[in-house]
Amino acid sequence: MDPALATTRTEVSASDRPRLARHVRLTFSRARQRHVLLHPETVVVLNGSGAAILELCDGRRTVAEIEAELGARYREVPGEEVRRFLTRLVARRWMELTDG
Image (tube, rainbow, N blue to C red; front, side, top):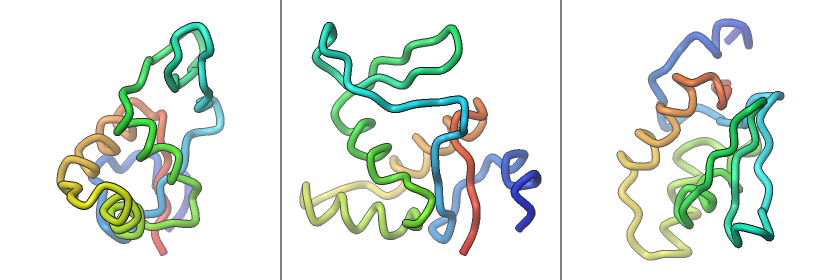
């Protein structure tokens, strides 16, 4: 899939390979003692599950592989919630998708 078209698509599938957009960074804020997403002029404080998902979004793993990894770590991970979270980030253009 053409990377330019990938950013216009908002529905996340199990075969997509998500990664943060170039202008977004995941980091740990010592002041907040939480992971945050840094976007120009915006700081988003993440909960533990959001940070765990985003740490696995490297552009190499598929959404299915991310769900499996989270399932191995935490036993039960609702895949639809992972995809819904990623879909919201794609809609804001904070996440890019490519398919395998």
